[in-house]
Amino acid sequence: MIKINLNYSQHKKTFGIAIIFLVVLIIFTVGFWKTQGFGDHLGDYLSQYHQKALFSSSFIPSYNQSNYPLVNLTFDTQPKITAKSVLIYDASSKDILYQKNIEKSRPIASLAKLMTAMVVIDNINNLDKKIIVDQESLNKGYGRIGQLEIGEKISIKNLLYELLMVSSNDAAYLLANTVYQEKYQNFVKLMNQKSRSLGLEKTVFTDPSGYASTTVSTAKESLKIFERALQYPLIRKIIHTQKYSFATFSGRKKHNIHNSNHLFKKIPTMIGGKTGFTDEAGETFVFAFQEPHHQHIIYISTLGSKIGYRFIDAMRLYNWLEKKYIF
Image 1 (cartoon, rainbow, N blue to C red):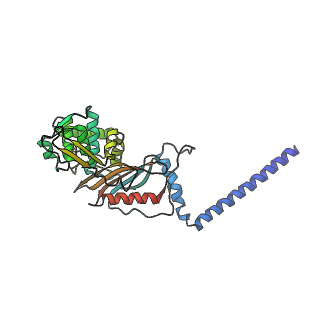
Image 2 (cartoon, rainbow, N blue to C red):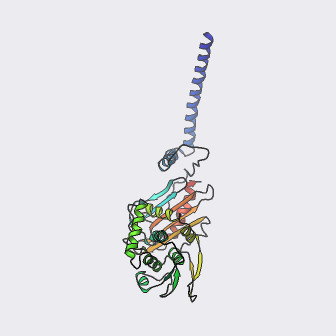
């Protein structure tokens, strides 16, 4: 009995010393952080894990789970951009890395063509089907970006390249009229049905091209549309293509088109993107790239950039991201 009591006393003494040592270590650590200028950022450091818990289905660390990205606590600068709404989202970690007015509804211009492409692919089995360019579609297209000519025979697949690479409004109406036999309004109904199926509450389509100012979405929901569009292999291939050529079925004309996304050289890991512009929407842009360290897929959506600032805003956000987060 005495031996047991002595052991208990000895363990109790050892435990007490351990507690005292732990308290001293904590006090020393906090003091060190403050002297290094990290004291003011301690809450930010902890909040990144709280944010992870909000956007992840499980926040139980494991050896196979990456806890990146981490916040760079010494970098406090905000990105200088003209865009009215912005969302940066890490699809791998489920983290929102930056947000600005992400729930605000705005005209999205040609970002609507991502939904147009999905609805076309959903409803047409033979993408090699020939379409004759007609006057009505050209009249409704509001612009001749695609350089399509009346009477040309072009496959649906090649029209999708025109739609997504050069953002042809003519191609949008040709495709819409093909799905619903010259009744693009019914095609727009399909766009809105798919929007609702994706759980989008603030997205409304009133035309297949995005030219109408009443075609609206948010930074958050436009990013969701883009994320879903990338699950279509053909769409993913098209938006990653920088140059594309095709000839009409008559062989009389050859189309040489270039991607309206000009950031492939500046962002080597660019997956692809979609641009847009109208006077009401300003410049819009949504794109995705893979960060090189842990191969996280990053999405960025910008709405309402000033004219001429779409790619400037995108690069400022890209460069800010590299400084703000550690991947």
